[in-house]
Length: 335
Image (cartoon, rainbow, N blue to C red; front, side, top):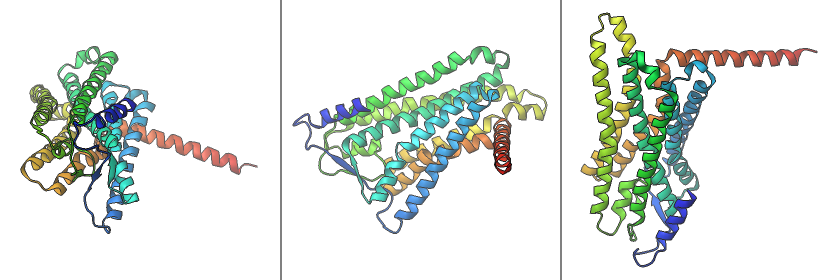
């Protein structure tokens, strides 16, 4: 982050290439009505706390139980960590702005927010793709599952995902840093979104838009194709199982993953389609909330409600803590 800030400062003061030296942008948010600000603040604070606590609890549960030290829960823990980072990139700044009644965000802060938003949003997609591959190996090649999904290989998949997305977010950030901005610095959104920043530039943005949509096509549609292909290969052997109970057991872990993938892709696709078709910034911002705040908040609950292992581990942890509290109370009451 320090390196990015230094680079931002350098580009921002590099001379006549910029029309003006940009110090800050204005995030317009959802509404300028003062009466709605407490409601928006309370709603987003509740969703943010629920997201952080839910995902942290999921990570702690998977760490505390050795039976959950499997590839599936390793990927789910990484997804929970990314979900926390994803919402922490945008929501805290919005809450601070509402509380201080300010719409300003510094130039360096805006570019940094945009970079981390791109990083964690696409990393979310990569992890969902890896989880689809994990499901494919578990169902289609159960006898070779532990040989294929070794801890080293699982760690390598996550590491490569991080590296690709860090490079991608840097590419997009450097592209925006090279754009000159004029006097219209109002962003009709609650965070610094890439498309809105590019549209504020007072130069030809054709090359930038080509880069944006090309990378979105490769890094968005590519993983989606892999997910759909994995489930196509999963459904084929499941259909050959004669008993209904056997089919249900084989496919029982898939609905949670499919629901998360569907919700994430449908809402994010809706954002880009609506921004391309209509200029209604309010509807675009509302749709963005669905995949950037609501989906990460719901993920730990979606994966936990139908998961007997998670529920049994949570029950054991609660019983253990209850016993500890009762022992402490008894010791205090003893003379």
